[in-house]
Amino acid sequence: MTETRTIDVGEGAAIPSKSDWGLFNAWTISIVGAVGAILYLILTQPAPYKRIIYYLADGVVITFQVTVMSILCACCIGLIVGLGRVSKNKAINLVASTYVEIIRGIPLLVQLFYIYYALGRFLNVHDLTAAIIAMSVCYGAYMGEVFRAGITAIDKGQTEAARSLGFNTKQTMFLVILPQAWRTILPPVGNEFIALLKDTSLVSILAVSDLLRRGREFSSETFLYFETYTMVALVYLVITLILSKGVSFMEARLSHYVRH
Amino acid sequence: MSATNAPIVDIRHVHKSFGSLKALNNVSMSMSLGEKVVIIGPSGSGKSTLLRSINKLETVDAGTIIVDGHDINAPTTDINKLRMELGMVFQSFNLFPHKTVLENLTLAPMKLKGMSKDVAETMALKLLDKVGIKDKAHQYPSQLSGGQQQRVAIARALAMSPKIMLFDEPTSALDPEMIGEVLDVMVTLAKEGMTMAVVTHEMGFAREVADRVVFMDHGTIIEQGTPEHFFTSPEHERTKLFLSQIL
View 1 (tube, chains in turn orange, cyan):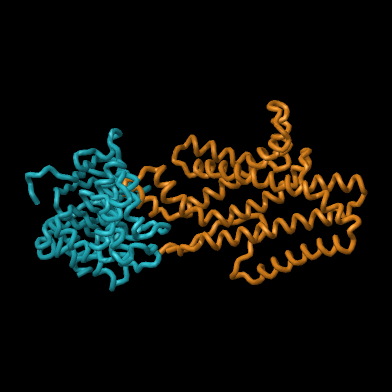
View 2: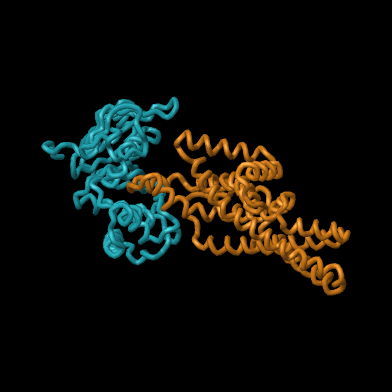
């Protein structure tokens, strides 16, 4: 009856799907290559590489922290913005749209500096918190667009059916539209998740000891620039690949119901 | 048609435009309790718009619509409450694909009427039995045929115990062999005394069930009357032409 709709995915790592053997192979090659390279370097040249990986470990934890916290906050902001963008209330709609326009018009790095120093000056918040807020505010706008697309992709007949039964707009949204929109929203959210993880490397500029900053610290002390950044890149790659696999598994699980 | 009863639906001088297209042009029509009205006409004649304006899925530009004593466009009217009295069946079924058949039926009674799950499910199963698909209760809509889905949609609307049922071309999206099973359910419903407004192209159904047939074209009601009158001796040229084309 209705054709399957897709949402424009934008940036982010490609998510392998079972039907796409090219990507699946690419994923396998990449993960095996990356993990193999790390192990090979540690085992054959433990002198610099073992030290590097130990030093980077703390940074991985921070990167994860920033990523997870930011994605949670960004999802909340995104849901609110997405609902605002589909709202029939003109004022709410305008506020949400303006937020999206402004955020999308400023480079993430500039936003990070701005929010970080603005928050630091007026509120004196912790470095890590400021970084998380900045990431959330930015990605909240992108998420808002994903949510909006997911909501508008649901057939209008669903809203009409719910309204004709007597549900109000809010009930219609939360009982009928959003539970269905989740399935369409999940893949692009997964992509945003991965993109956000990579973008957290930007917070290394803000005195947050994430993976990249730990690498910078280590290399500037030891002058082992090549070795350190090789390791940093490989670690990012492994994390991103694992995440993208996780996203595609989740997607497969959630799509168990067949679209009509 | 009991003339003594106050009309349960009273549509007066209603206008509705979509851009430059005049979908409804000064339409007046009323229905009394228990009456079955079948609205026919060529596509684009405004018949669906008329039906959809009864439960305010379309908001009219001018005119009044009174349902069960309430002006649906009055600011004091709680349209959500009023819609509970108006069951609606769509051409494209519009079942909730993320819910099982049973959940499709119980969702509204539980959330809107505060019915307990047990009571709602018992009632839902009774309704599914009535439309002949009790065995599909725990399947998802996508696992059902079109005819089965539409019968579920009828049962879902009935689950709110509406006073009036509105059918918007309920068989138009169905394969020919499935039309019968849906019409059978509708005929049964009509025989039980349900007040029904049906937009359809099924002339056999109109003949069998309708108390009154309303013919629309270009946003106006051209002619209305009993099926006998309508199908045997229509007055207007436009009606005769339409009937000659479809019969």
